[in-house]
Amino acid sequence: MINNRKAQLAGLASSLLAVTLLAGCESQTRQDTSTRADTVENVAWQTRDLAGEWAYPLDSERWLSVGEASGIRLSDGADTLDHHPVAAEYLDQRGGLFVSFDSANGRLLFYRVDDAALSFQPVTQPAPINDPVEGLCLYRDADQDLYLFVLSELHRADQYRVREDGPELSLQPVRSLPIPPESAGCAVDDRSGRFYVAEAGVGVWGYDADPEAAIERTPVAMATPFGVLAGGPVALSAAPGRLLVLAGDRLQLRTGDTRDIALDGAEAPETLSVRWSHDRAQVAILDDSTGFYRSAELAAPTPSAEPVERLPAVAPLVETAPVPNAGDAADDPAVWVNASDPGASRVLGTNKRQGLHVYDLNGRERQSLPVGRVNNVDVRYGVDYRGQVADVAVASNRTRNSLSLFAIERDSGTVVPVVELATDLPEIYGLCLYQPGPDRLYAFANDKSGRYVQYRLDLTEDHWGGEAVREFSLDSQPEGCVADDDRQRLFVGEEGYGIWVLDAEPDGDDRLTLVDAVGERLHDDVEGLSLYAGDYLVASSQGNNSYVVYDAKPPFAPVGVFRIGANHGAMIDGASETDGLTVVASDLGGPWSDGLLVVQDGRNVLPADTQNFKLVPWRAVRDTLGLPAHDGPALPGQGG
Image 1 (cartoon, rainbow, N blue to C red):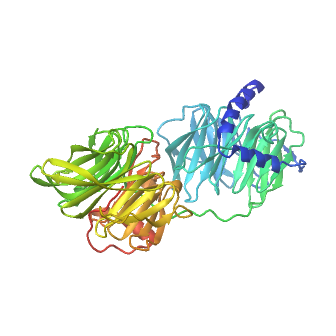
Image 2 (tube, rainbow, N blue to C red):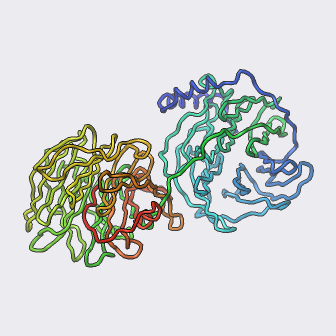
Image 3 (cartoon, rainbow, N blue to C red):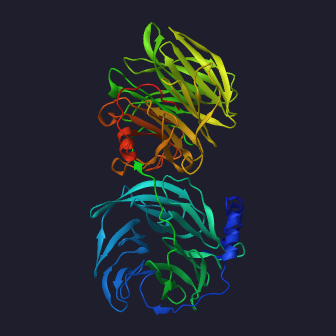
């Protein structure tokens, strides 16, 4: 299972550089030193003659074992109760559902133990797993969704959602995570949502198992001399609040404290299987030097801790086509409401690597306008364009530090680029529109220094232009903003500090009033802001993948926080690291009859793809937070 010592040392050297660069490594090393056991605990080990390379204790009498040569075997320690001759590797389970890997045919094996019989559950897969598999482990999250991680020798962990449709099982690819070379096994703590990977000879690394989480690794326990794992990790097992590491000539049980447990003569411990209960761990370790197992029962109480609470979730009904550019590309949406045919309304989405995309309410792309690196976009209604009444969209364009002005043809919904309005902002960023009356239209644009400029837009016939009429500043970087046209208020987001409100009129007071500061409820970065009619202010709280709703009237009291989770039935993932968002209260028909929330999705998974936008019925948000229904139409005030 583990390559020679020279390869281990090479892996150790390459990983040590990564260790020094990872946040929290220094403090973790200090923690390892401070919790290192002064003595090694001894337990009563038993020797067992069991088939296979992995053996799981089902209870005090029965054992389930798997091996490439021995197959899957159910025994009571002396007699074989059931046997399936298949080349099976690896073993993990959740709630009586077991998974192994058929190395001869390159497929996963799911099965359950029913008293004295093994029954296999079929799995529908789009294709066999062709990569060389190096391990696997299961994870059940707080929403009771089941996931499978499959480790590849190509330094990748592929995460799948296991769909449990009655007796049938199927897999949905979710995402892939980079893992170190020489990865020797994995385990997941369902309570904390930590995915652990053992790098042979180097240490144990931790990742966030949530499919929507950032792909970052942190050191958990390192091999000597940089940590306290003697000989480096060989195998892992985890349970809520507990991690068991097989390393060298001992086990390390990591709970609130760290305990080292001697293996009592095992010369080449290689695999680890654990049956966890609330305060015990029944352990089975294969000694490769003898071919026999060592088994013991350990005291392993769960550390006392508050249960993990998750924010209430709403699900998207539609997602747009992904943008064509990789990386951080999609940013901010706006909705144009077709007053004569609401179902033909459009979602405008910025692509800060290319231009503006236009989608219908089914998420299909209708237009792609390569006008430059547009960042934020907003929409207003009723302007003059070539002798007709049209609507307008304005976007901040980072290619030219300009405002890109578009006409929206009311009969077709076609978005037409009209003109670029130059600004003196050296690094234009966010934008929103303000329309306090039919003949007055303004754009607020900011740059990363915190500077805001208010522009009066003159949109008559085909001679569109504008001029700067006001300036003010925030202390640090802003982006999202939204104007309440009826109350002449402007809400602005200061990414690292909070949300402010001030007068939106060009001759208005520049004094800022704090709506909410970054803290336990609102997490930085504060990104998109939008208004649901004049009722609610909605903010994307990027730091914890959530959305905060406030009363849109003073004192701007918070009314709820939610997240956007996956819609597994529609194969649509949730939303994470949202930049821009928009919400409209108009009746767009069907599921959008109470309005529509559109958010940018910073990590598009299920399966992994480039960024896109998620469409959520406002009714779902309203019901989740217990908000009253809106009474009356509303068009403007979208924001960005």
